[in-house]
Amino acid sequence: MIRLAVRCNPELAERVLAELVELVPGGVEEERGRTYVEYAIYGEPGEMPTLPTLTAAAGDGLVEIETSEVPDDWGDRWRDFHRPIEIGDRLVVRPSWERTPEPADGRRAGALVEVVIDPGQAFGTGSHATTQMCLELLLGLADEDRSHGPLVDLGTGSGVLAIAGAKLGWQPVSGFDHEVAAVEAARGNAAINDAALEVRRLNLRDEGPPLASTVVANLTARLLETVAGAIGRSPGTVDQLVCSGLLQAEADDIASTFEAAGLEERKRLVDGDWAALRLEATTAP
Image (cartoon, rainbow, N blue to C red; front, side, top):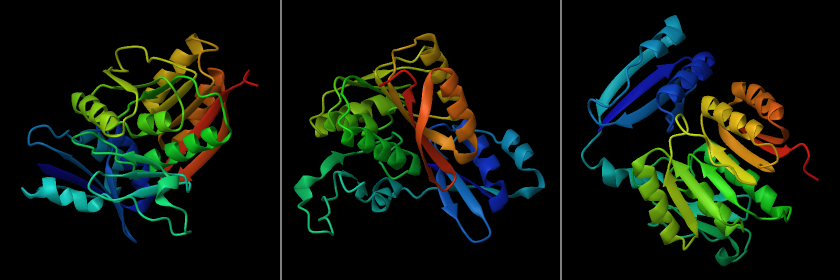
C-alpha cells in the first residue's frame, strides 16, 4: 500500500483539495498544522493518480508531494483511528470492534440510534466531516416527523447514510455506488445492522441517478451538478435532498444549481473546508 501526501500553505488548501477530490472522489485524509495543510490518499503501487494538474494549480505555493510505503500491518493498525462518533445526541456510528459509549449526560446507551460500520475497502466510517454533517441534517428531518417515504443514497460508500436513514424510519431505502468494494461493504453493513437496504452498482457519470422523495448525496460538486440536472428533468420527484462532499467555496454555486432544478436551500452546515446543504422542493408544503 502506498500513501501519497500533498502538503501546501493553508491559503492554498481549498485549491489543492478541489484538485485532489476530482482525481480521487472517494475522499482524502486531512491533517492541519500551524503553517501547513496536508492531504493524503492511499492505493496500491501503479494505481495512484498522477498529479500534473494539481502541481500547476498550486504553482509556487506547493510545498511538497511525497509518497511512502505503508507498513504491512496497516490493515490492523488503521483500526486504532476509528472510534465511536455521536451525532446530535441521538445517533452513534461505531465500528464493530468498539462498544457503544455510555452517554455522558446519564442517558442509557440504548436510547441512541446505533449504526455499526465495517468499512472494508469502502470510503466512509462516519468520521469524515461530510458524512457527519449529512447525518446531522438527516436527524433534523427525522425530528420534524416528516413522512418517511423512499430514500436514495447516491455514492453510498460503506452504506452509513443509507443505514442511518433506514433506522430513522425511511423506507424503502436504496444505496448506489460505482465501486464494487463499496457495494460489498454496504451490503455487509446492512446485514450487520439488520437494515432493509437494497444496494446496486451504478456509475453516475454514465447513467442517470435514481431519484426518490428523499435523496442523500455525499458526492463531489461535479457529480452533484449531474444529480441536479436529473432532478430538473423530473419535477416533483424529489421533495428533500441532503448533500455534501462540497468544499465551502463551492456551496453557493451548488445551492444555485439545485435552486434552478426546483430545490431551495433550507439549511447549511460548515466544518473546516467542507459544507453540507439541506434543500427542499419549492412547491413542498
